[in-house]
Length: 219
Image (cartoon, rainbow, N blue to C red):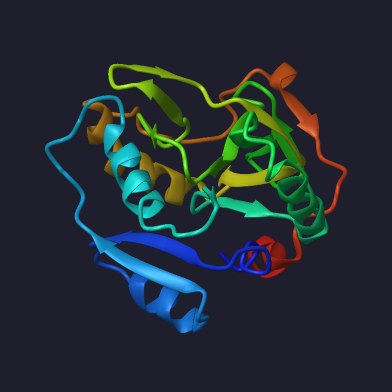
């Protein structure tokens, strides 16, 4: 959240019910741009993770700006990219053939010193907020030209990257997460024990700089 606040006019956060201090920590940020929407997760929805799409749409449909930027809880935007993103939005704002901006993704795997290349490498994360769009899951947008037919948005490169840290948490945290969320795919994840179960050909050393907001977490 803090990585993106300098760029946006408002930051809508969909917050489901939880047993930890998530809501209190969000309120403690104490920024007038943050709009918290408390939600209920449909525990009966266990079809291919669609519950994530439902939560994404709740937040999206509470956005009031010309453009909406979707960022997940384990993703960060680098401060050096903020002005690049702003300039790109300004450049395409009046070009309505551009419906979205897509980003390169850096998926850190195991440690913050290496990235995995097997996952999705690019995805749209900024969408024009004046078009008919739905989210079939947490990753994609689908534009509805007609009521029964959808397509991917027409997108241009944002000239920036999303830093994804979800796969370099402590093993016990990843194990706990997978045990909790498997039900939303109507499946049981295998008991996660190690990040070592991967083809090393899918890994690359990361030699760049991490976003400043990640300094304390990385330490």
